[in-house]
Every structure is written in structure tokens, then in C-alpha cells.
Length: 202
Image 1 (cartoon, rainbow, N blue to C red):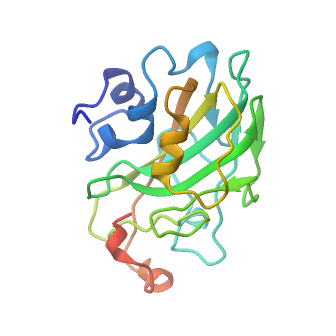
Image 2 (cartoon, rainbow, N blue to C red):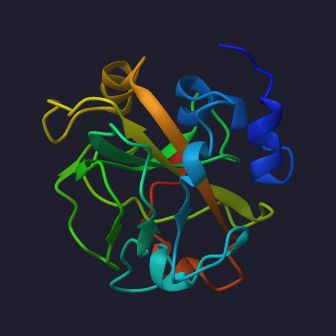
């Protein structure tokens, strides 16, 4: 895989990030698919590039995944897939916080904390929203919410790995978009995250 971030993705991320070239969208999408037909992802909880509320992170009790909304994908789309990764975590692959599929290929939304139809394993090998917990001394990490419209329905079962999901999606992405949210932990935030697995760096 190329270590160079495609220009269309770099522009969308608004800056350089350690693992941006390894994001799922850099692997599966291209300039033609990105934003095709006005396809986009948004959240009522934060604007693109803004900070995530602690209620979506490891630094607050009862934290959940943020709400997401997307507009209609191009005609012929059969399924929607969402992947959330940390573009700034160290490692050979980005820290994967969420993989979701089984969503119909149409305009839709996920409510705050809603259980999606199918969820794969995150970097901690749990089938759930992995709460952001970047190292205390790091600058803000950028969490990239990536959405894909596919030209076929997925047959992948819940609990599949990120690698299995990427393999199943290869050659079937008709449109893609990103939404970014940032998070930096402040002094004292480790009280609730003290049992977090810091090996995941994100």
C-alpha cells in the first residue's frame, strides 16, 4: 500500500495525519467515488473537524457512539457501511473504533447509542464502539468517520474483522465520504479511563 495520502483525502482531512494513507477509505475509494452524487456524512452532535464531546469517549461514564446521518447515495446502491478509524494512532494499521454494515443503501441515520444491524470487531477485538482514549500527552487525534455505498448487499456476519470487511468491500464501492471529529484528553481525564488498554494508542 502506498504511504502517500491521495490529494482528495488529504484535502478532506485538512492536514497531515500519521496513518491517513492506511485508512480504509484510502484503500477502497478514489477521487471519482469520493462525494459522488453529493453523498455525504454528518452528525447533529459535531461539525466536521470539531471536537467530540466527552460523552462519546472513554473519559465519561456511560459513553456511547455519536449520532450519524447521511444523504441518499447514488442510484443502484445496495448497502451502507461505516468505518471509524484514528488517523493519528501509531502502528501499522489505524486504530479501528467501529465497523458497521447491514444498513440499507438509502438516506438514513444512526441515533446516539443506537445498536446498528451488524457490527464487526474493533481494534480491541470487541464488537462495539471503541471509546476514543488517546494518550494524555498527545495532541488531539482525528477520528475519521468513513461511509461507503456498495453496489451489492453484504453477506458478512457480525463480528467479522476489519480485514475481512475490507476484503468483502473491494471492487464494490460506488460512493464514499468522510466526517472528522477530534479529541484530546485533558489532565484528570484518566480517572474514568484508568483501565483502558493504552496499547491501542487511540
